[in-house]
Amino acid sequence: MTTATDSIGTAAGTLQVHPGPWTRQAKQKAIQEETRAAFQTYFRKSVKTRNWTPWDDIPLHEMGERGHLLSDDTVTLIESFLGVEDYVGDYVEDSMVIVGKMRERRNVQLQWGAEELKHAESWELVLLHSGRRTQEELDAYRDKVAEHKWTMRENHPGLDTPLGVCVYAMVQERATYFNYDELRKRIRTEYGLPEKVTAEERTRGKQVGAAGAFKIVANDEIAHHAIFLQMFDIYKKYLPYEAFDTLFQVLGSFNMPALYLIPNESEMREALYRTKLYTPLKHGRYVANPILDALGLENKRALERAVQEAKHLPAGLGPQQVTLSRTGEWVIAMNAESPVAV
Ligand SMILES: [Fe+2]
Ligand SMILES: [Fe+2]
Image (tube, rainbow, N blue to C red; front, side):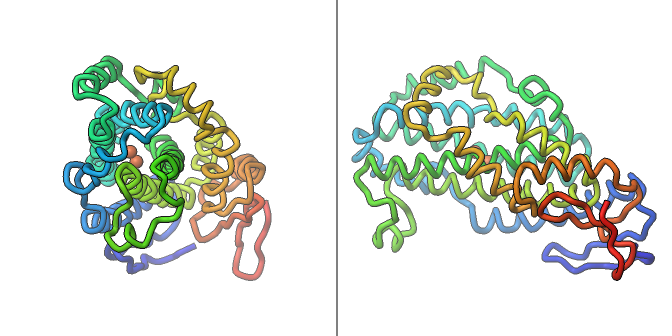
């Protein structure tokens, strides 16, 4: 246990390391401070390296040339993602209520929302410039989206807490990244382009047409996954049982947001079935397992064990006193020489 206030230098500034005892309040304070530092690093990088607009930075002209090559299923899927992304106002509004006056979490959600708003606008532009939907059709579709309201409580019961928002977003962002990257590859095939980017695309720094749009948006999604993963790591350090229990809950019942609300739900399901873009097997292999791996767990069974055993950890342990093995066992370090497994 740290016995005196110490400090750690980070890219975002200096963090105070609190002395014990680790009361619930002390843990919450430490979570907030570390989240604030993570947000600053995220924000800096975001505004300096992912500063793009749908109207200027995606190759609209090439979409017009190649739009007729896209299959109907691809178009249906892009339209479905337009619907899911267009609930951004509800996602932000709901999370503002849930995180309340936690300023660092509020800031994360606001910046995240500012980035997310570009995605629905991008999918509208892709459909329009590909010549596959008219402006009137898109307006009508988006008006229908607006007839429903999404809330975490109704769509993902039990996750309407600050921790729940973080864990759900961590998984959802990785799933969205996976979907967009798969769709990018599918578009390249339908355009007649090789799977790997060409030398010409690499030189100009953009993939062709709609593939370029999916690349730039997918890049946002994986950055979103990374900040929520980092925030989860902070929770995990101070509140291991709550963190892993929530992750267990999210992974056990994961659904993409607003899928039941979009106007073309049944067409989307048929397109997903035919294209096999996103299946339960792919979700396990490319979404859930990489997350568990990043958190230091070898598989879902290790997560189950981590949840079960975390219940028995003494409440006042500090973050330096406990480590987690890849098989989900917690080890308490009584001192450097004598670790004790729980
Ligand atoms: Fe998005
Ligand atoms: Fe995202």
